[in-house]
Image (cartoon, rainbow, N blue to C red):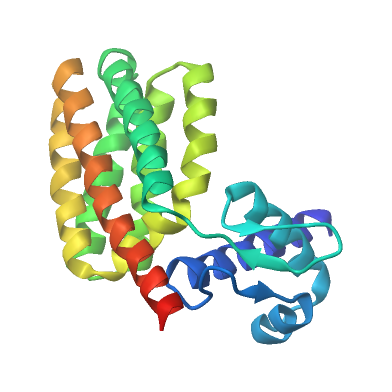
Length: 222
């Protein structure tokens, strides 16, 4: 029961995060539990838990005895977040180039090949899943538990932006091409190039995230 409740609150959290990132809930919007429960067709319990998660991610503000409100994500804040993730994931890629096991290299090839199939099929949901898997294989390949933990914590804060960038099929194709450079460098044991390729990849993800942020701000101004 606890596991099911956890999955439900995670799903609700993701759905609300998507609405925020896509500008359906604009900065300053009050998020009433009753309204969200009716909108999403769930009880208030997973809503309450999801709001706590969203506050941790910085997408909403929670104040005692007041409704949750959608936070204003400034361009500087988003830039700093992606700069940090870019440097951390690039460091993971550099270590992975030197430390990945043969099993991990095989897994990397398989996930990358599945990503190509998802891109060809224009299956953006599946591509996002495989994108997350590919990044995780690289993180685990660094064999640095401290670096992995810090990187994953920051990734969670940017996940809604990274997921929704794939609503544009052109971004899916560009992401796959960027993955090609990363994978090639990793399989060639080229640590310096793996670092450069990954850092550039996250930089492009930041550009896409900035577009989503601007959309949300524009809707709030209407």
